[in-house]
Image 1 (spheres, rainbow, N blue to C red):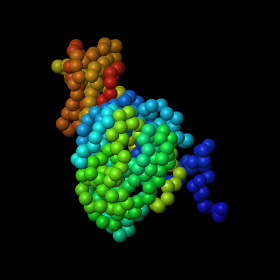
Image 2 (tube, one colour):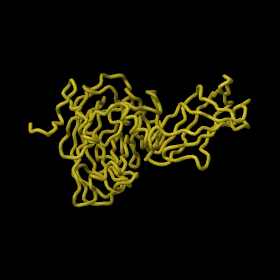
Image 3 (cartoon, one colour):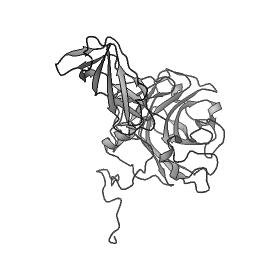
Image 4 (cartoon, rainbow, N blue to C red):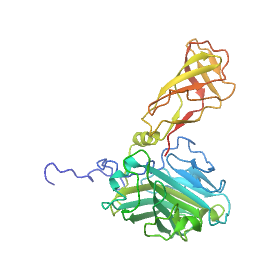
Length: 361
């Protein structure tokens, strides 16, 4: 090897997977190994419409209560090199109608896909690879779509052996047509996995279509069509090029920070007693968020205390973002329904749930 040349494969894991860290942001999927679950901490959830599950993974569904999602659902042995997966379990034998759709998807920010140059003559090919395990066999489907879902590439893949981890790789030609978001904080690309999609939202696999809102490939297997069916997935990688390369492992702290750009769970802060049972906290975000966040939830009950070791507990949940407070880096949170607080006291968060802030795509 000539002097000054770096071999990107010098460092490998015990199973031979490259871990050099020299690729940069090769994999455009965040939380691709399903290690971060800020919202649910590993608990099973049954998504309602437009609900996030594990971090960055969104359940896009036409009807609720047809499947559950849990990190490591079923506790099966993970594929080599992975410790976690996103597990989906069907809750009924639902017959898909033409306008039904049940999808697991991730929207990728335009800043992270602009170099693909889609919508131009310089469009780059990409390869989507992942590990999948299902109680069902057959042909499954998904799509790569534009932010406005006006351009889509339906793809298929085959699971031949039930309850066995299968490695899948799909290469997709770069789209020279349509309009794609460039280097912005809007949606650049959406990766979708169909769990049961009707004919209205399906199209023939293998080429780009300009039909709006295509979520899967025609004829794909419906996971929600079989009661108790399982669909587990991990190691999802979307990378530039026509070949699937080794999985882009990132440190846990790095992955968490990438997730916190879109969603933050806060469990600490310094508060000031305002009187009338309210307290205010100014909190810096752990990372700069994608946009000014929205307050999703505050603890059902929060206890704070002052230096005199006097505790104050909410009688009921309350929380808001006062005007002038929120930014991508800093929020002012006001919470009420405390009793007995002394105005002007500096207070500390003692116990309770989390304050949830989101700036999702």
